[in-house]
Image (tube, rainbow over all chains, first blue to last red; front, top):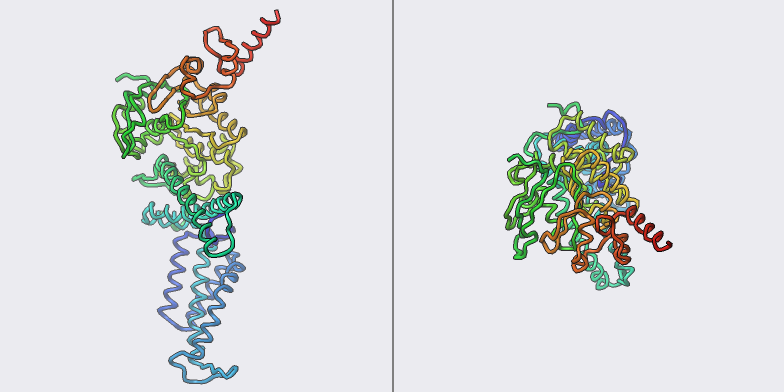
Length: 233
Length: 287
């Protein structure tokens, strides 16, 4: 399915949890590691998050996410290890660069905090469909209009991208140069943006009508098709 | 009031905001329950505006100068609450892509969206969505992303999303304009199915050969004015029809060229009737 998001389809107990519960876990786990900046707390929550990701059978996807931030982690170790203001005890030297114990310990806390945040939000993002999360938030008081804006962006942006590709192909077939100097690329961009924006505006009007005829503006209590056990009220 | 008409329009005149020109001018007609009525006319004739007026979106959604009345079961659409209106009258637009709300990521959820908004109990939603998807042959596609369907399937989904609300009147504004012949045939099959279930249908369509096979009457619009409201054969036999450059079914054109009329004195509009008349004419000339 072409939807923005990281959701991985699986049938696990973690997937069945209410999106709001997972959101609360992600927020709590992040906040606690900031409030208690210790290695023990960081490791505790990281182990818990990795355990939950394992149960959800999305560990492989989580590792891919963690790899993305590993570059940042290396720079944290380098900078904190050498330049942390509290550096006092030299630990080792590498290519004439001295690394300090205090800075490296500080870097461990920061990296644990970062990995913990990614792992905790990873549970939410990898096991929750964006539309379910928004539905659960609407059920708990988020304005349906705000919810719709977020949900539709996730759905419609990929469609706009494919429309843009179609427009580019059409412009190319008419001889418009897409590669080359900045000036050429800028001209090509203008040729793309006009039809894309105008087309999107026209579609937006019809989409508004489609919402209207399905009574999106309802003031009555909505029914939510999906039911999460913890969300029952 | 004692009116038995499903839809009654009385002297409807409407102009869009910031426009001096009337999009609709002094339109009056009635549609009986279960009737299937076509709307024809050239671009800018007011066909889509009339559809919006029938569904109450003009003047509820589109403001502007509005006079006259659109009555649905004897009640002015402006006075009917939107909750009641959406279950009484449904609208399908021409672009299947833009009718997908984008709020849901599967076909099943997209169809259920309107019912969720109406607060229908969950079990009933499931029953109604399943019935509609099966009737429109979309059940196998229920877990797919709406945006990944073909044009014909998207239009069927748009119709399903409206039909699930169980409207008594279905208004379709050029539902086949972006579809190939297969998709067009499928949409007309659905229309035929709805007609046999007693749903009142109003249909804007340029594919006249298909349209005349299904409609009981046709409304002919020109520059916002209603030129005629009558049976298809009477409309396409109007002496002045060529002046309006609205076109006609190909069989009618052929019979006009050969000056062949049916027993009622009109040019045939339906394929089977035209074939019969042509065959008869050939036999006559053979003799």
